[in-house]
Length: 131
Image 1 (spheres, rainbow, N blue to C red):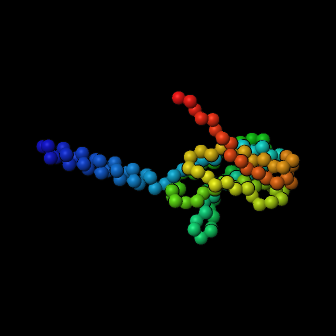
Image 2 (image 1 turned 30 degrees about the vertical axis):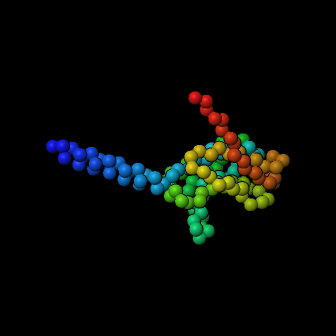
Image 3 (image 1 turned 180 degrees about the horizontal axis):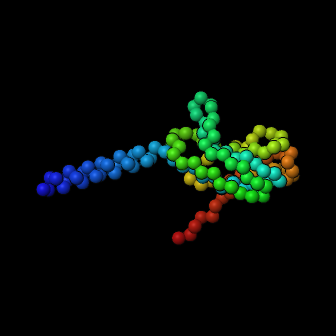
């Protein structure tokens, strides 16, 4: 009887350990994007692989002076992931920001608040909750 109970507990512990290992192989990314420009922007969470190829993991458009959210879960933990924003008339390259797992809050602006101004993206620091 005792031997059977011990085997069941060991089997349960091994099963739980396997679930932890399997769930630890992927991570999730979230971006809360605040569009403080005068025009709509396209925003994407992008994965870059070792060969330099990139794949869009999540894409959305955000209206001027508005905010949007992108979410992508199930990304392999060893993958480089970044956020990219662009707009029509942007005179430069799309702005990019390396993402950390979890939630990242960013603000997108344009010089002079005009459609032809250079775009910028900055992280908005979140307040630390007191316990």
